[in-house]
Image (cartoon, rainbow, N blue to C red; front, side):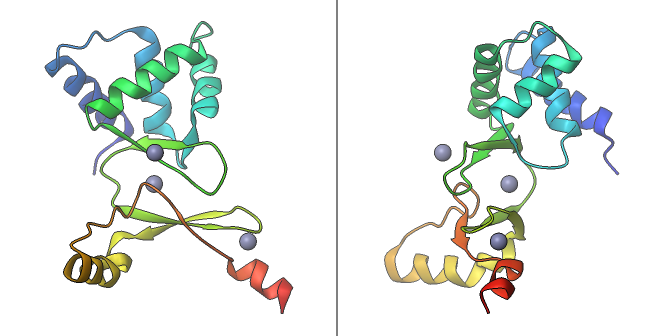
Length: 146
Ligand SMILES: [Zn+2]
Ligand SMILES: [Zn+2]
Ligand SMILES: [Zn+2]
């Protein structure tokens, strides 16, 4: 089992391998991402990083997220009209989001296999399962409509 501490070390090691400086704000952002149970916006990451280190500015967090994305350590996704959310790579899933109450769910990547295969064979189109959430109506909202 990978612990949070070792996951954080892996990310920091990878930064070192790419000759990136390990600053205190960077450590804070990595720790926030490792500890996160959910998908966080840049604002949420900034707020949590500031609890660890008071002097982390939003622009610093954006730069760090950009660097982590360039190294494929972090990915972002878009859930409906809300701000983009970020998390560490390596979680294989797609997203669906409710257009009514904006709850989002992670869906196993396999759930998209048929669609992905169909798009590839008919259009030569490679589906990105993660970047943009599929929109729809969740079970709870459907129950209210009925
Ligand atoms: Zn995007
Ligand atoms: Zn995700
Ligand atoms: Zn809903």
